[in-house]
Image (cartoon, rainbow, N blue to C red):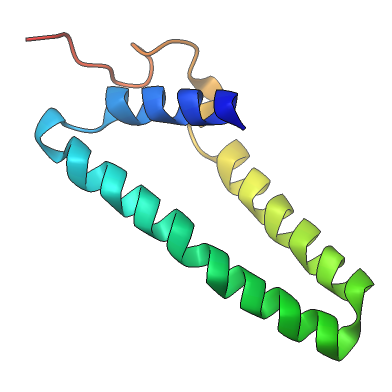
Length: 90
């Protein structure tokens, strides 16, 4: 989703130190694109062994775990970039 990318990019740029922003961004890209084939392989194995409903249930479980992690973090309390730790431009 484009709006998700805009939001996460803005938050990442507000929180990460300027001199580490390239490293933080590249780590996010590598972990995101690196996890896709792993997830696809896991989904293929689960679907082959247990069927499509089990595969979909596993996916829902992983998304629920992500949601719980987000809700337990400080992120839901952020209402502005200042709350996220935004640094003034130098």
